[in-house]
Image 1: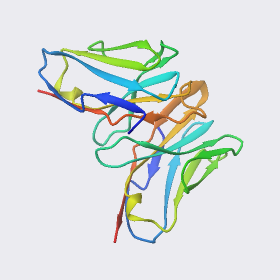
Image 2: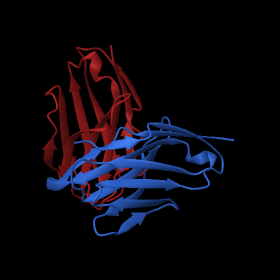
Image 3: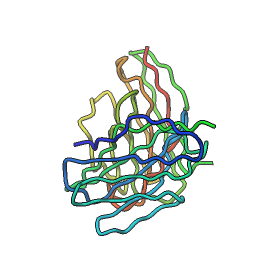
Length: 109
Length: 115
């Protein structure tokens, strides 16, 4: 029931773009995205709700394809501070909420 | 300073010890959670409390015992743990519910090592 994230790891140079995908085998009601830096707490990035509403605190964009049961996180013009592990969390029917396995993102100068 | 505070940050305990993890949130949220984070595994939900009532126990062994005396405090009591219980234990809070449109706010976690 947990969502599958891809890729598992990615290395970027500063200024490059990246896309992280999150796929579910079940119909989705909402998708959360979090970033966790080493030794720190996961930090909320964005929520995408069924119907298209988005709630976020940072200038990071994401998409939510209800039909395909997946979400993608878009990181453009990456900065060194973007490094960390990105997790998606998905809510399915019955208020079931599961996190994905994470995508390790490393931005190098 | 994070709105969710966890203590201690690190804990080493023997298999016969009894210890407790503490979590406090200063965000006025109604729901609190315990998650376990092990290497190479997704975050695993352990317990959920909504308005101090336990609404979810995700098949967690009885050697883990949660306590939520009020909506701002959450404890995880540990006894007779196994080495495989070594992990990072994260506390989180949200406005309410079990996900949905309420973001989770995490503490920095307690790194637990069972020897």
